Length: 135
Image (cartoon, rainbow, N blue to C red; front, side, top):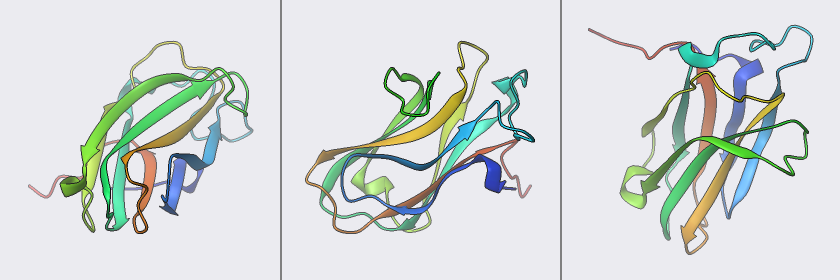
C-alpha cells in the first residue's frame, strides 16, 4: 500500500490526550493530491499504530472537514472507535471509504481519548487509494 506525504494526516504522532492530527489537507492547494473536484468515493482512510497505547479505554478516530483551517465548524465525515486491545504495535485500522458528499476545503484527523490519557501510543494516518492485498 502506498502512502503519499501530501495525504498523510499524522506521521507517528504521539497521542497523550484528545488532539487533532498534526497535518491537514488543503484541497485547494496547488498540486494537491486531493484536488477540489476530485471524487473522494474511491479513497480510504488508513491508520497504523506505531507505538502501542496504554491506560485508555478506547480511542475514537475521526476524519473531519471544514471550510477553514482552524476547523471551528468541523463536520465529522468518517469515524471509528477502537478499544485498547486493538491499539497494539503495528495494528492496522481502516476507517472506510470517503464517500462523495459535503467535503469542504480542509480535511484533518481528530483523536478522542476515552478513559485515562495514555502515556504511550502513537499513530500514523493517511488517505490511500486502495488496500494492499497479498493474495
